[in-house]
Length: 195
Image (cartoon, rainbow, N blue to C red; front, side, top):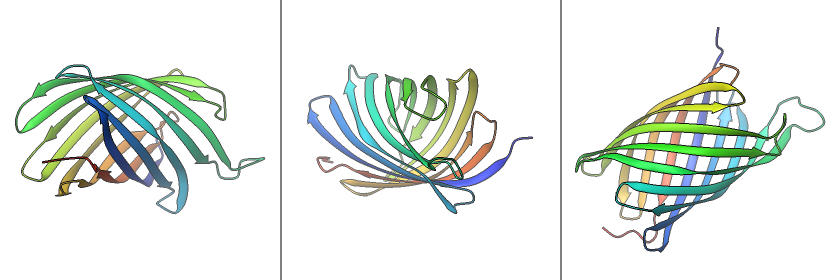
């Protein structure tokens, strides 16, 4: 029987457009677990996206990650690196909703238990209604000889021309088959955005 945990994730992204068709995002995320009582993980890094066409976006990025392993000797905090790249394809581009499919190849480097590669593929629907943007996603991940899944739903609101806030829920399965129920908050800052 799978174990369950209540967690939270708090994401902040700052997006710039240094060149035409190119987006540079500075990403940060803090994560808690054990019914929100334990600070579990911090990660930071840049992501670059290039719009190869109206429907295809290429992505590459890097995260530095610091993660807590309670009771682990000789140290409880371990840092590692994650490199990734892939493609997002817009399957449907309606004026009120969009359907995207994203696939990434990721490499985890210098982590406890050894380096490994993971593939992830995710489908999502995002609606637009005035300043509100509800969304749902489903994702499958394959790494360390195991498939796992994630599913989520949330809503974003444009509170300012250059600022969007969001709130959501994600169900996440770990390789151990434990399930996490995660409350998600996100902040998107776009200093160069124009209406």
